[in-house]
Length: 231
Ligand code: SAM
Image (spheres, helix red, strand yellow):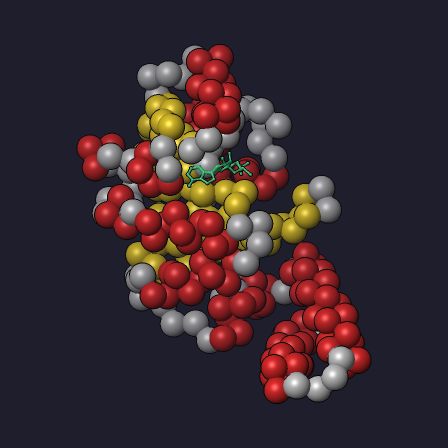
């Protein structure tokens, strides 16, 4: 992967950035995504935000090597603190982290989202917490993608401003992904069900307590809910 040729995962994220966007890529360890978006003339300007010094320095080097210092501003900052109101950022990408970390970044500095109209979020795990955050904070799903690369499954959630209601099933599985039911989607949830069934088997061997019975009931309910969708 480099700034000209992204991984399939980051290419999917990039495909949702509107032409002419001013973007901030938060957690931009090598700044490949912002550099790619400028090279392809998709983004007008970009910010690469990174909280750890080593990756920040890698990003700075990368932007220099690409000859993009006038278009990509690399900033050492925690989450959305990389963004200033005067940047007029309209699109934020946060990729390659867990859902809870992505949500904590969004929650820590909500005022930085004032000018933002699109969020492209790529959680490695726990996409559900992002959908929960979106519902509570008036962001609506514009699209969802599930993809597999190097034996790992990733989800990309594209959000725009707007009200959204999601059922428990949609919060967990997605709004569009269960309708599309791609092979990768089925694989992800078959794996998840297999994990839940392993936990259930060990709970069945344990001595019954109110907590264990509750946990068992919850797992059985989840398994039935997901099986109904994928079968
Ligand atoms: N976004 C790139 C990608 O998808 O390939 C890099 C993913 S890397 C696994 C996560 C990066 O996010 C790391 O470089 C980490 O230091 C950075 N990071 C984690 N928490 C952050 C925060 N609060 N603010 C900015 N960067 C953060």
